[in-house]
Structure formats: C-alpha cells, structure tokens
Length: 478
Ligand code: 4AD
Ligand code: MG
Image (cartoon, rainbow, N blue to C red; front, side, top):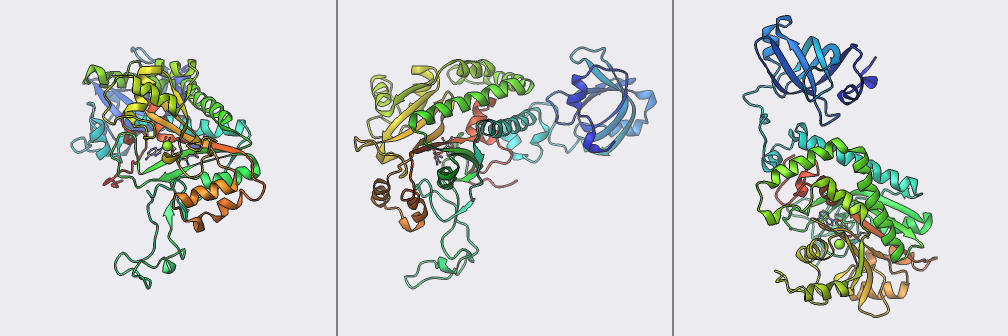
C-alpha cells in the first residue's frame, strides 16, 4: 500500500481498535515517562489531537530513544489497542520506531510551554506545528472548501479574475506597482516622468485591489458568478484587521437588486458558520479554550462577551439588523458616547462606530445601506436623492466591516458622469463602461474578506494569525 492510501492519525483515533498492526508517521509533540516506559504524543496534522505511542524501553535501543525528542519526525509500527489511560480511547503499542528526521532539542524554538502569538509570528516557518496554527490551517481549508461548495450548490460559476491589472477597481489609489523597469535610471518621457510605454505591458500595471470589475463582465453573461483570489492593498494601516495581501470572495449577480444582495450575503455567511460548527468542532473547541485562557490576562472590558461557540450559534439564531447609514448616524449621535472620531452625516464610519452599533446597540450583525455617495466607490448605483448610493456594508461583532458591496450603476450616462466627477481615467475603464451600452441589466455583488471571516470564526484577535504568511508593512520574511 503506497502513501496515497495510508490512513491518518485522525482516522485511527475515530476507529475502534482491533489489535491490528499499523504504521504511522508524524512529528513528536512531547515525550514523557520513566525508566521503563515512554509515552510519545505523535501528530500528523490531521487533527488537533495526538495519538499516544507507548514504548516499553527494554525493547528499544537507548540511543534511538534519545533521538525521539519534541519536534523530531518518526515512523512507528505497532499494535493499535484500547487505551488504559484517561484522555484517549486508543493508543499505539510500539514494536518498531524509526527516526525520520532528528530535531535538536537545545535549538528547536517550539518548546512544550505556551508561546506568545507575537513570538510565533517570528517563526512563521514553524508555527504550523503548533496546536493553534494547525487548527487555523484546517479551519481555513474548511472555509475555502465551503465557499466553493455553497456557490456550486447555488449555481454560481467560479471566475478567475486577473491579478495584474491596468485599472484601479476601488479608485482609492492604494495599489502596488508591477514593473520590469530598472529601479535606477528608469526611462523617462519628454515631460520627465517615468515612461511606462517602455515597461513590460507598455502601460502602468498594478496588483489588483479587487476582482469585481472583471467579475461584473462575467455576470453580464453567466448571470451568477464569483471570484475568490488574492487582492492587494498598499494602505499603510497597521491594525489587527488589515493585511497588504488578503483573499477576497466576490459574488456578482445579474438581475439582483440591493435586497437580493443582502439576502444572499446573510445566507452565505450563515452557511459558512454552520459549516464550521458542523465540520470543525474539535478545532473550534480548542480555539474556544485558547481564547478563554488568553482573555484571563486581559482587562474585563476587552474580553469577548461570549465564548466562541456560543457567539457563532448566536449569529446563526439572529436575523441581521438592516438599516440605512442615515439611521445609523442618528443612533450614534443620540448615543451620548464620546467617540474618538466624532460622527455626523457624511463621515466614513470608523471601526469604533461600527462596533458600537453591533456590540452595544443591536447586539447582533448589522447591514448598513445607502451610504453617502461621496465616501463610496464610483460604480455604486445612485439613489434618486442625488446624495446616496445603494451600498451595503455588513458589520460583525468584534470585527466591524466583514463585507462591503452594492448594487451597481447600470446606467451608462450616470456611471460615465460619476467617473469624470471623481477624476478617474476613463481610458483604463472603457471596457467596463461599454457593458452599460450593450445589454445592460440591474446587477449587484459584494466582497467578503476571507481573513476577516477567519477572525470571526476562529475567535483570534489579530489578522496576522489567521493567514499562513501575513503581508503587512515592513513584514516580508517568510
Ligand atoms: O469594502 P471593500 O473595499 O470592497 C471591495 O473591494 C468591493 N470591490 C467588493 C465588491 O463589491 N465586489 O472590501 C471588501 C472586504 C471588506 O469588507 C473587508 O472584509 C475586506 O474586503 N478587506 C480587507 N481585509 C483585510 N485587509 C484589508 N486591507 C482589507 N480591505 C478590505
Ligand atoms: Mg468597504
């Protein structure tokens, strides 16, 4: 039997032992015992749990056993039996142990004691070996799979938006340039500016901030589509909610209006949370315990009001509160709370405002709609009041904005005028505008930040800890 069909530790832990001889490969998490017997906790990453390997020391070479240390990789052959000890139902009675890779216990940075998340970020190459990151990586996988499953089951088509683009989808100018021009002495044009005509694409190129514009093109042919890819933003915000490289899920639907968009977003988020509860229970139990231990060190007001699983269940049980931006500003103004950033109609809401609405006022997720046109992107459908657009942001407890979306402006004249008003180069968007001339239809969509979803579902507090290799300002080691 080749490696392809080998069972994992998770499979054996779930099975009834039949005293069969099996072999397992993995990494030693810990070894304890006495002069007669060793108990080795072995992990292969297939589950948060380790399997207990029991080795009677008189059957093994002393030098071999010395090399079985935390972090080393080993192969064990033996009998799978019912466990005598507490905490596990089966264990592996070792008959043969082979060292696959030594691990110097003096140097190995991951000791049995609990390490801080900050320290683990400095050893991002090894942190998948910890319980916390094992759980996070399995959960990330499950969420990515569930996203594709949800859309496939609901007749959406997966579209691959380009990563290198010649346009700024959000018009916020926070892009990373892509170039093959030399950093020194780049060719200049007559006006002394860098001559992008000499660059690889013959024009300025950047990493995309969103797959939306391309997603719209596909929706205006296939009706229901989505993208799920990496997006890049050069905003210099060093917060626990921002990455320079993050993954975004962007569904786009022809014939959907704002209400339909909200219905889809709420159903989608609830499906994903339900999926995590149904399929990742061991990891969520672990993460909940971890969070509770971590919070013991925090000030009371900074602690979450509910344990992780209760919080997830709570969101499933509630219907999201829907109200307009204008109503929300009214609530904030009447709250009597002194915000760091004062609120008035027209300002962009800060995370403190969003969290007040969600955590203090409504105590459940909130969908805010119809934002002032001035603070939103050019593509949003304009309301008849001439002041607001058909935007929707979904705000979550502990997170703030998790989804941003809108109905799109499908009227050529209005869109065209808005692009000019905002000083956006229409040459980079002619193709986008043209879709409003050839069979335009009402359509809508939204973007879910994958790592913001991961923050919510895992209960982790920093976005750097829910992506394997975070990209943030001055951080590009791994
Ligand atoms: O609100 P945003 O900027 O919307 C768009 O990009 C639209 N094109 C989406 C669409 O309508 N198709 O971003 C969408 C979501 C945010 O709500 C947030 O969850 C996440 O992307 N996000 C970030 N996540 C991590 N780091 C950042 N720097 C993020 N910026 C946005
Ligand atoms: Mg937004």
